[in-house]
Length: 168
Length: 413
Image 1 (cartoon, chains in turn red, brown):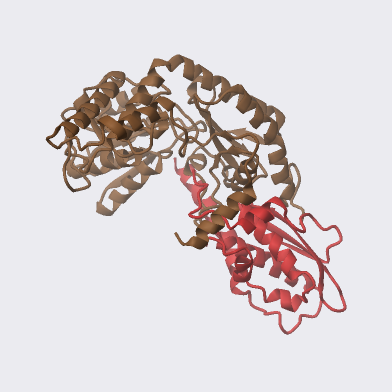
Image 2 (cartoon, rainbow over the protein chains, first blue to last red):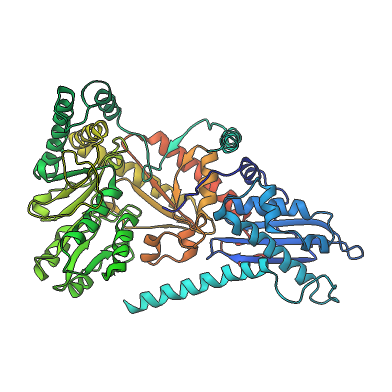
């Protein structure tokens, strides 16, 4: 079976898996987004409550379908972005999330990438019907692309498997 | 390993804590051994098997005697000659030797047929040979994991070197109709060799190598609750394999290096115990298996059984998909509750591929991601299984509560 990782998790990951912070759907969120899919094996939903005047994140919460690292990455990100402006939150990298978790094993980097991907989607969603600030890039950033790639890859794999089955 | 890593692992284990009750259901990957097998191992290390079996002194001869005695035990239960047994250090090595050793020896035939649900230690060596011009064909299986016999029949030709099919699948417990498959192959081309990975079948079903008319069969000590470090390949008399590793020869040409005598001794002891209590252990495991499957499916919604039922399924195997759950998160949450299992989730591999066995039987990606593999052993009792049945609903419910996708509903966002 494939539930094997080369190294055990950092204790921080287990702690956040046991006691995640800011878990749950936010009914009155000002922005929200999802990255990944259950077919990929990981999916993160991010909810943001934003102060309209200061553009500060007052509250952030998450839901996660994924492994312990995925849950821990989402949880720690909601803590990092609290009280940050959207511009500051936009700058947070997956590496920062990994570092805060005591360094994710290489096979788990995508958990950090997915969390950042979901956050940036939520920030873009917030500005969908508002004037776009200068700091928000028109083009997708690398982390957003990675999240997209993961979603696309699974579609390609699923289609491939369907084709193989049809050929039998 | 750096001291930081050791510190982290210690603190991880401290954070995990020691659960009040523990049930280890991961004998697929590694596990406890029969106390008698451990005693045999220690006895060999201490007194009678610490020497090299091919050196000419008393201690060497004692080791040789143990090696030969062990082969006799295996040969007796499997119905073969002791000379037909080659020791390796595990099942992976035995599978590699079977496939690569055969290809090295019979170079003119370039087609290999394996089932699509084989262990990776069969699939990977076969795929490795593709680099050298071999054609590898994977046999499709039905929803329960049974190989398509017509497909085998259609694909055997004069160029087919080998057909390799596990007697019992390691993940979903499918007991193949091996005799019928072998008859089909030999009927079509008597010169095509047949290998069976019997690591999971040993001790679970009776295996008569002569009657089966199989050419090569792999076995593993740890899968029969014997010590790690011993495996065996049955090579039918007259079949000429070439070695695939090179070095100082010991008692056998095909696997150079020092045999792991103490583990081999423990291996033969474990087989002896299993065969002396065959009906007892198997009916015990079947009861525990069915108790676990039945209760989990009754108590938890959205659970699928992977693999066949009843007597078509290995006595020890439980493989369930918990929909709306990611398997690795389940293994960690179960671990915190003292229940140790493994998952077919892809979450741990960057290639995003969940268990190839579950995909081959037609499970969707999300169904494979939420799968758990559990194996009962002769060491478990009803109390253990009751504990798992009691804990599982809360574990599944916690993991489902974290997810944005809820049972029966659309995603939240």
